[in-house]
Length: 75
Length: 75
Image (tube, rainbow over all chains, first blue to last red; front, side):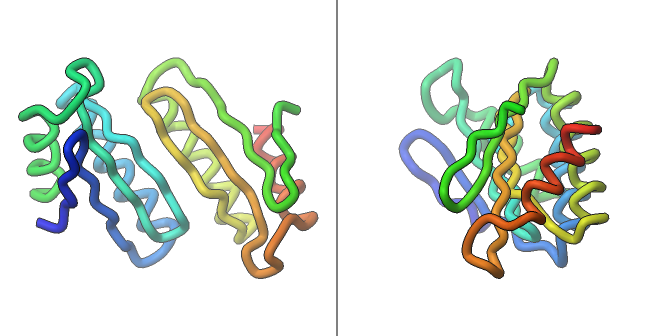
């Protein structure tokens, strides 16, 4: 929930308490990304983190994007 | 060195070995940012990390930006 779906990518911005909490969130996402061998674009703006998922090798969205989004949502 | 200077911000893209190294770099930058209470915009693209520094409260570049850039360069 909260993911915007475009033709070629899905994106969501998370608002954390502060910069430190944003970094901790990015590290958790990073672990999930490494496990999945699938890496979102990650933009950190102080306490806001925007994740953008696409499958570069396929030139668009695939199940891998939705699966990683699901894992990120599950924590 | 390697920082691009625009009127309102300075920016540099670092290329690390892989995503994990990029995350470690971001965590080091994050510690320096917290110490300085000055937070760059951070964009992670797999093994590439782009840092952008500006002083939002002043609407442009200040010594704080160059000082944090210097600290990041010193490791």
